[in-house]
Length: 200
Image 1 (tube, helix red, strand yellow):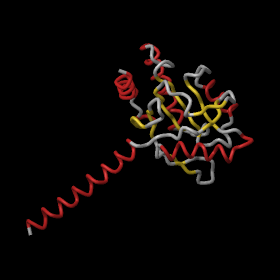
Image 2 (image 1 turned 60 degrees about the vertical axis):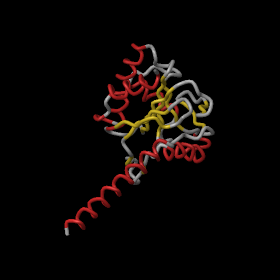
Image 3 (image 1 turned 135 degrees about the vertical axis):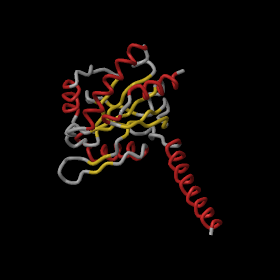
């Protein structure tokens, strides 16, 4: 009886370890396709394959979000100040905020969102969406990015998206480095230390 208990316990342990390994390997191999092109808050084109000089902290939001998205954005603003003090923001690390609701989040809406948070409009923190004239195509482009990062989202029909709660650090080749919780669990020191370790 004891032997059966040990065998069952070992089988459960192996199953759990295999499951954890699967997710670690999946994340480690995640990469945003270089051909993905979106537009930023100024209506300018942004291609993921062109900028190979900086780490990127990627935040997924929608501007109608009542809680976790604006909380994360505010925490990233605080993190940005720390990176600026260290002289790495815009030089070694940039922020990308990508909407999962491109139908409503036009460049103008994203620009207003930035103004509401007093985020300076420059190339070091870009807010990305789709071109309304090609919105179905660009929504598919956004889906390529979320799928690559295993970020799940769904609109249940009331305009209030249900979505994953992670931000992502990717390297200069758009490959996954790490992920961090969104909202109140976003630990700016953890993110700061990970970025600085990667820069070194």
